[in-house]
Image (tube, rainbow, N blue to C red; front, top):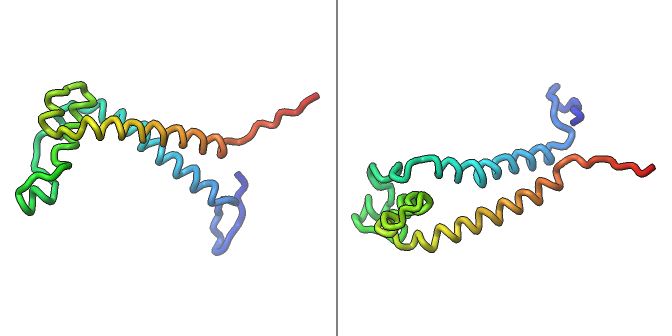
Length: 125
């Protein structure tokens, strides 16, 4: 990457947009690959303890449709189906949809990464 002198003596990349695109792809990689692996490594009951952060529970003392979803998904990805069912029954719908979206976004990530990789010059002799 060539660097050139800009205002106030700062060295900036020649194509900052390309740099920001690469940074965005790195962040997507962290979200799409590393975070699910991190959740799989955590124990299934990691989020079971503690006070609820749901506004409907804190302010109105009533459960909403999303209450217990995090705990249910954690138990579901660790194959503890009864515990997941007891926390939130909708997790059996939400988790497969989330996995589908993560996989499709990962393939979009791979396609966009292909456009940013340097091209190899293949010369025919």
